[in-house]
Length: 140
Image (cartoon, rainbow, N blue to C red; front, side, top):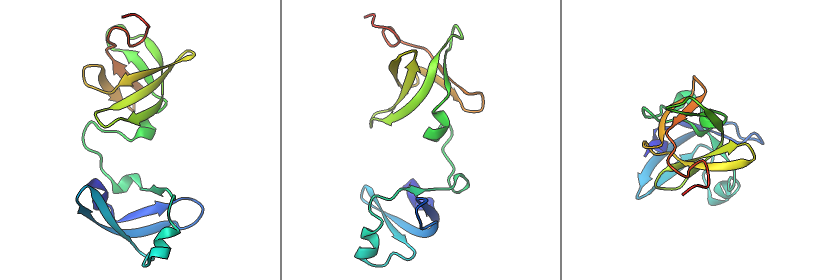
């Protein structure tokens, strides 16, 4: 479990800062022990808080990207080079991620599967796609 490789996390800006963690997998979950969180009431005070990690603490697998790095990238046609729009969000659906692209006044949902998304170039600022029929228009 990837989360269990972390040795520290950061709590939301409203207090807490860096917190050391120990973790072990349990079935489909991660059991996490945070320094300074020793009782159920301690844990309850953290309910709803957001945990952050430092990029240098986590190495992504080849071909994976942080969602925040994908948002704002241009979406470009692999064959024509035409720019369609910008990625505005990413949804995890279970089967595959879905990129939300703003195309003029419309939002287009792009399944992040190899047959459609050919490459993601964060440094180059673009996602290259091969759109399937009907993806970018209402045609059948």
